[in-house]
Image 1 (cartoon, rainbow, N blue to C red):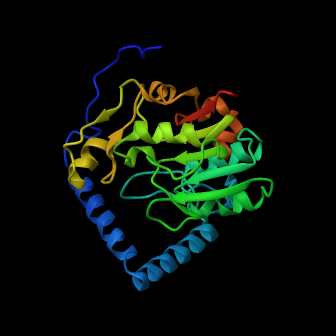
Image 2 (image 1 turned 90 degrees about the vertical axis):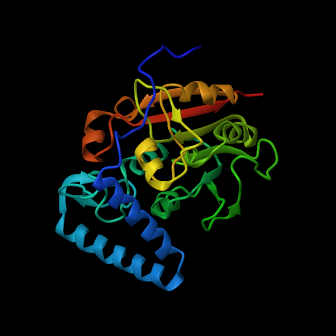
Length: 276
């Protein structure tokens, strides 16, 4: 089924503002620090100390994090980016809390899970779900398996559940990645896909855009290669999935959205492999 025509796709930002320039410089600096073991340990220690202090200062009952179990007056904000909804204790974002909630209520049923680009903050969530056999995968970061998502050295139908959150926007050949996700998913299995997403416009990508600042302007982050839009469901269907696209506001009741400070407009794509 073709998507209805809408506004033409284009860059996320109109141009390279001073704020975006600073964001790119900071991101590159953090990448450099993380590549040096001792400096990385200092950075992690500083982040942990900041999280402990923030959690203490924001203690309260207005908000709850299903990842770490913390309760706070409000969630934290990032001043430079302006992003909100960050857990003061575990630093979860709304998407992480949505995943934790879906897992807790059984919407993501499956025994053997392949988790791409695993976030350590989700480790406590899976510790509460011993029935799930979680296998982590990444091409560069530490994980159980070192896998190229576009060419996985795995047998067909290896897993009955896949988590792929904020990965595809980094992958030049996303259609190959989607096809591989479908191949390693068993019949009747489920894949949860989340990406940065814009309503009302199709996906915007341009392989000639390679400089970090130019990618920040075009796609919203210095290491992204596209910003997804209304054709994402059809891309996933083209890989052989049955796709259910619903936002957080549609998947959760209003009280949960408010208390866990979810992004009510975030699209959560449940992609099922037809039973063979």
